[in-house]
Length: 206
Image (cartoon, rainbow, N blue to C red; front, top):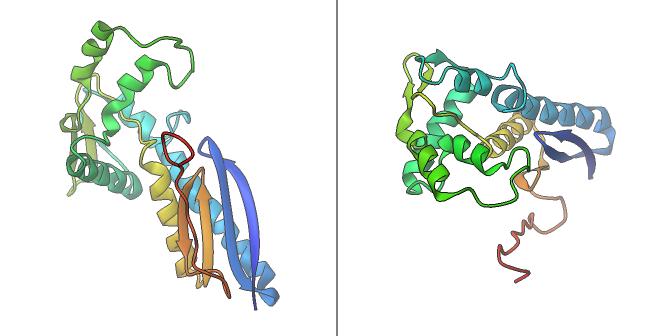
């Protein structure tokens, strides 16, 4: 029979929780599976965090207006996906929103009121997916002057995808990975119904 083994870590500003199912005789293998989940998510955090001074994202933001820099394959994949989903969603997702997020004080929780319209209008020209230029053949990214990225809307989901892919490659029959509500699953719990993932209604408990 398959048994669940679970671990949790504090990572990417939230809690990473993973459950893998392995036979009772493979407890050591299950622990290695969990470490692989942690490693996969930690790698993405180290590349794409706004809070780690040596991350690729911080380097790219610091290069704003000064030409392209080469980035790792994971970072380039996320930037390409960001362009795709920005255009697909009509701008509902836009990773160039960092100047606005900073203006509103969300990083520091300092602002106690809505920014004045003139301040917002002054920042808006620095926001827009067309201000990011990617060159796939060279795996480089460049930002127009004054523009900066915040990958908070996509990096966690990408990290989950990487973790689940790593578990699949290791032959894990069933697993659930939860990164602050970003959910990835593999297989289904043995002898149980398929995974049930709920989403809270944004305007109440409906």
